[in-house]
Image (cartoon, rainbow, N blue to C red; front, side, top):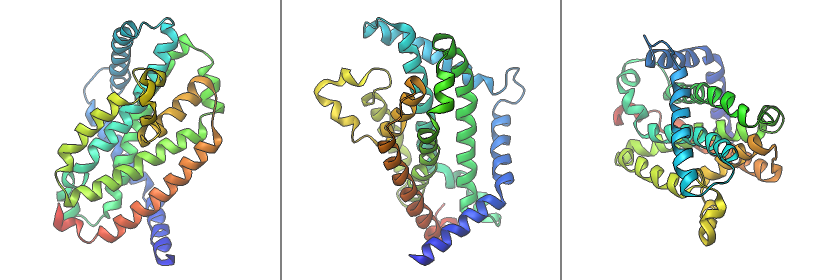
Length: 265
């Protein structure tokens, strides 16, 4: 136990000492993604706005929504959060295989590539969320107060979760490569059964499935805190504890697997 904690502390020191490197490489990926485009990374926000507008109009009509402005805010916040969770999870199984040449030929810990991917997902989230949030303020100006005062713990839970859970998947997929094909299918099912396009009440008697949906337990408190300014601190602190436990075990797993990774990717 003490040895494990010492190794994790060493990982934290590595992350802090090399923070400029993995953050810069993540930034370079974002810039390269939109190289030679006029709007650059703002395309992330525009693509999300287009999706929100289309889905909001279609599903708002299907579900006979009376207050479209409230529904657009609900859908917009939830969809941007979900896109980042889904992207983080779906990219995880191929993370080490995509960096196999660097892992084999460069003297960098596998931890570095997980931090780089995490930074990339965080940057993508905030860049796409910014434009969407500005537009949503036109519908509901109080969102600015809510996000500044109420969303700190749910946001922290979200940021921590998109590190340790994809890392765990990444390590498992090294041995079970079929996960790369299975994960996107599972995430699509989770998306359709999660109250993102619709309200939880629409699930009726099967609403209990959201209680065992880990992704929704991360998404919903953040959406609620931004949308209404309400935070269930008991639930949020419980999720925070789960996140810290997840980080502990995933980093432990990574430490034990680090020596084998170059031979498995």
